[in-house]
Length: 347
Image 1 (tube, rainbow, N blue to C red):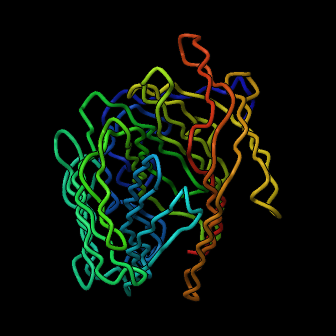
Image 2: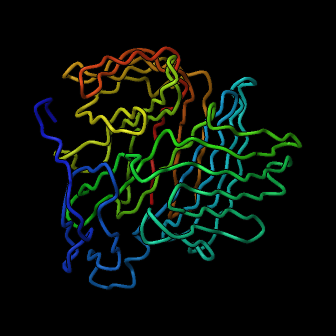
């Protein structure tokens, strides 16, 4: 994509797919305007096989001054995954546990990102409830890495808070519909390893990665994200990425400032896949973004279930540099904590 390529903003509500399985609209939006009618997907002549190719997930993260907490429910068709992890910035450690569920049995994920309850209630319990003013997360994982993990959290998401929402084709009949929300003020508590941590909205922010789509079996992407505060107290976030699908109509790149998306076009990444701990560079050809990301911790997550396999290198670090808002304001980032990851998947 050249720097002159348009970023097609979607403004009208519609279904995601028409009755022939084609995308009705392609581009980006500030809000989730499309009804996710996955039942109309058409990419196998033998329809019962289609459920094995549809991927659905709800991924939540909460950034605090000292920790990052993440909770996910995913149905990958062949299998479901329930997982959580805790990153300790000060100690430079992370703890993680994953429960794999054959065929995703017991994992409930709603049709759209705006309503309903996502849940798994078995030997562990993760429940994410969408409410008009936010998201309520409830987690009970008694044996989590031998330490125990529990949380009751509310992420504030008023109706006017914008999200980075994209819908793009992947090849012929494949597609990706994704909503990423940054900078949701978080409150509640997390208990981990016998320690209760209070989560307060003046210091802690949540993010959501809500994804639905049909991917190529062999997939690759890079995703970078951050939710934090500027020195003047304003909430600031980043969502950047590349590596999958046809992004000629829209990328997923954006600056999030006080709940508003400032859309960015192309962003070029430079990093060393042989040593992810080296600094990363992110720059846009139009000059609106120029960042260095300096990692301080590497989280590696690998799964091999024969038909389903993945390897993620998620780096936690600090962003330094500048990014320009739509009105021309140059936002300086000086140590904003976030992450950047490279992900290879067979799914």
